[in-house]
Length: 249
Image 1 (cartoon, rainbow, N blue to C red):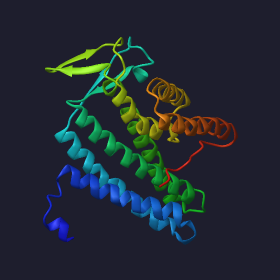
Image 2: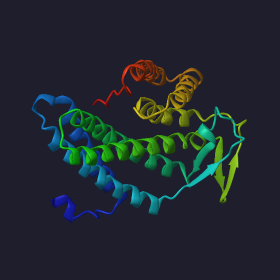
Image 3: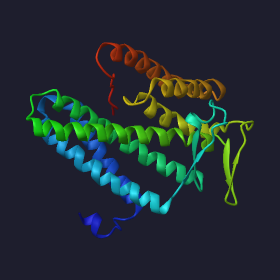
Image 4: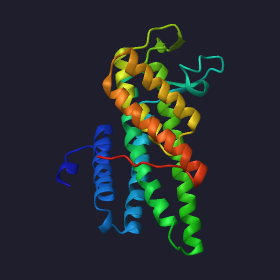
């Protein structure tokens, strides 16, 4: 509270830092102390955090807007689903993706808790409310994943913004530093329970490219995790529903 008095709470980094800290605390309490948890209590906490983080995105959109471009003839191995986002700078992309990663983890927590609560005996009215919240969470995660993948072309230097003009060059050499910065982004989307298998296969190929061409061992390690999740997801969907493996700390 003392820090709040001397800090502009509308400052973007302050908002991101506070949200990230609360996210880590909630994640720890959910994954490390499950026997002591009151799920309805944690559900309320996760919903509050999700709402607060919406404020961060509102500030981000005001301070670092981006443009979405649809390019139906683009190389599908470079541009996922014919869509990419264009940002004013690599710094803006980094801030946006950091925010999206935090919000993805918050949404994963909420998704996990909602699945547990919805598996219990609930009054019809409460079940209807929570099912709506579940669908809203799925949509948030889906949009986050879509926009994270839409940053790939610019991060790898296939797309550039010069003097307000957007340039797309599929013959460019992929940026090695850009590839490194994408590893965790691709992993986060690849492990998401709402990511479609077609998109996950695209992510697997990108991680393979980064690991093979740039020699980043971490990409290959996380690639193994995404492949495992893809295999388990396929088997799980055939049996009952989407496979979900929460983020760990």
